[in-house]
Amino acid sequence: QVELVESGGGLVQPGGSLRLSCVASGNINSIERMGWDRQPPGRQRESVATITTAGNTNYADSVKGRFTISRDNAKNMVYLQMNSLRPEDTAIYFCNASRKVGSTMIALAWGQGTQVTVSS
Image 1: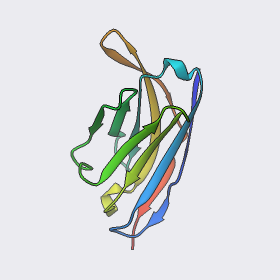
Image 2 (image 1 turned 180 degrees about the vertical axis):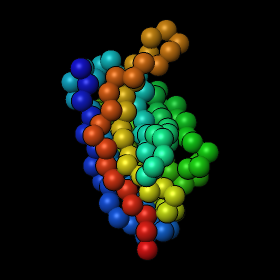
Image 3 (image 1 turned 180 degrees about the horizontal axis):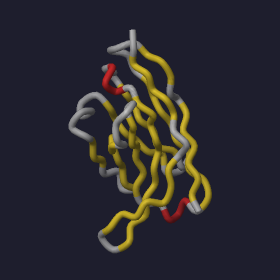
């Protein structure tokens, strides 16, 4: 079993920055990929960014060039640096972890979520 705990959300003005952190515990050796999803108010959850153990990253088009995902495997941490924040980035952000079965990623766990609000 894998457990994920996020931190770092808050209120920020448009154009500002925030860094989200997520620490994994439990059966961490099973984790191949970690990432961040978000759920804006009244909308469906969407993938924001992912990073594999090897450091391969993937981003949603809406955050490319503004957000950076990174990972510290020794500390079992994943980070999301968010710059040039926009009101449409307002959402609950969830950390997630997946394992690889063959060529398929299988979800292992999600964190409880952290609120990010971008507003003046």
